Image (cartoon, rainbow, N blue to C red; front, side, top):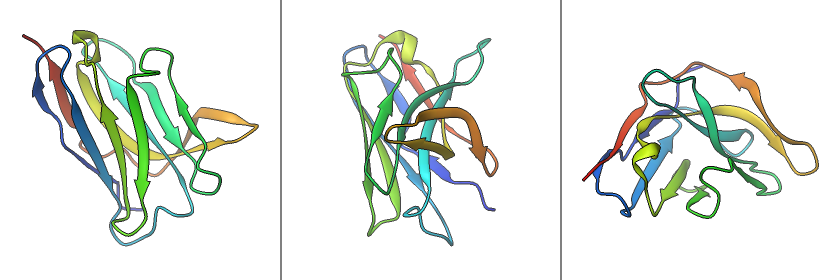
Length: 126
């Protein structure tokens, strides 16, 4: 399966905003939960947010809850991560991948389907 393609990263000041995009090529995102993960230097990759296409349930890690919003655009076959009130600790490479999250079942961040893409770098610094 071709990895999902991330984009939209960049350098932003603390308190700023960015919108990341995750695009699928050759297949639809309608049938799969899609999750955003991030990996900071020297740290393990962690789950940030997930969206289920069936019931539109969303999940967020405690560190981003209230600041990040995950959405889908079916026509564009794209999942977005709107990031606001960014902090230096949000600095990381952000990846999207198919995963498993569902209402009533939560998000299994160890359930990963497909391969990791290149990711997109987000740097929050003044």
